[in-house]
Length: 291
Image: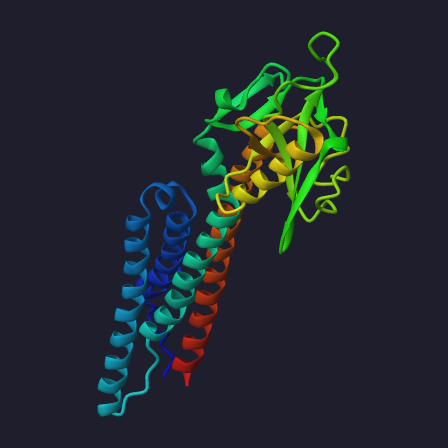
């Protein structure tokens, strides 16, 4: 008799291809983007639901195994393969999403919620006017006053350098108030002062700053500013701490771009890997069924 080909049920392979990919995409999105920032409890609830789903699959797989064992049946089952695809999808989706959030999207959201200012003149501007600033672009004449930089050591060295300008009022040799300070860690010698080498300190194109938002570091930078005030007879009323760079607005947008690029790349790779795994499983099951 001619060998009859078994009819393939395409529903389980399609489910195995799309559902794990959907889980990965959903959890990676939930952990990466705005929901995690504005409603972390909801994001955690969705993440927990993903893990509960995988746990239910595990119990279904175990139950099916013992039922088949009781009837001496050892035919292959899609539920095992489905579980093996969904488990890493949930783990990697949640893990990669959390990584993307912490490295790219959280810094973006932190600064994006604050205001951006351009053409700020450190000669006339005061820190109190920019307490809601996340990004500040200074005038072309602005630069770092490296000679009056200072550091404060507490396990690490917290370094600060005032933002000044070559365009001063009248014939004065310094600013009346130094409220804008570039910051960095372990890039100066400490209390000796005058050797700030943090970030793009020497770039002629750097005239902007991305605001420091880490509350744990701010008190130490404030102590460094107080040391500079005492040593150089300077005055800082409402100091604002910044990471010195050419274009802080572009820098923040780069965080968002990197976050979406990582997400879309991971989603595409996940789909391809899932598809390959399903085709390999189909080939293996067909081979087993042919014996």
